[in-house]
Image 1: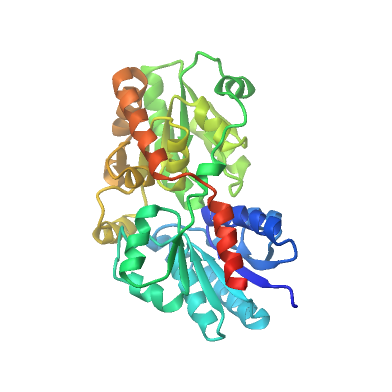
Image 2: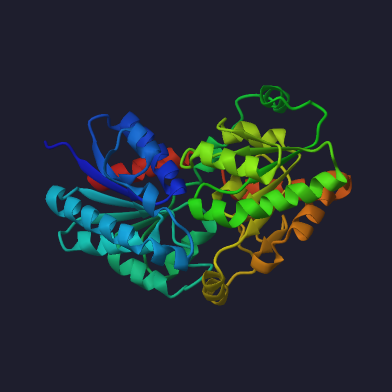
Length: 378
């Protein structure tokens, strides 16, 4: 019998990480499987033969996508040819909806089964696109329980595989040990600056974080600031920006799950990282800024009251969100000070984060996803 071939396509840093996790479980369950696809360093290190490195097309925002359209178009052509040439037994698409649905449509022409992992946010905006999704895929694997009802209503086969973060988000050392490693005093107050893993997020959010940190230091001169730098980013470039800002910010490539607990409060970009922070129960606020045009378009499309995943999963406002024009150093610094100085408020936020943990389920997400993949090959 021929070795089964699965092609996996991930276009962003978070998708690359999710794919790498279930790839590891796939190899454990079926060591002789052949895996190829599009992704980043994590997928490559996990054993996937990359036909295209996705780092150059990992952008967010409609205008930003247009700016990188030539790179995205090139990636589409490369991946389409790989699908035609290799005819995988299964195409697994990880998030990155617009790109991946085009690849699903292409794969359909060759009778290739398509499994989509991590649902597009049909519950947040453009809900009618669920019918388009259903035309091009064979099965949807979701990581939030509440998503299953949307696909069931649309008569699209769906499985809740569990959220991979539940197993993944674990600290390997105590907060005190991590602080010692970073050269921070045990009793110091620490604010984490988490600007994201995409170049566009850094451009939009890092200057605002510098201004906010500067404002906080006026009120609390002994504050320490720590910033984890994603592997997808140029560490030296971020370091240079910090130096030019005049701010003393501790940069680290250490595991983010060790960095989070050593913080007393975190200023975070929106996205998956807010769930990671929530699972470790560290109070935070969420900030979001994109180009003016992108925001004007997206704000008219979004149909839910909150954009932070931590708030969406909790189904209520657990942590404050500061979007676009509200994302000012005054608003953000005021919220951080409240988290640091108002113990009752701090405990209220932590209690809300515990609800997020409860709603994410019991774990085993990556293994469940790997088993679902194998079920399509039987």
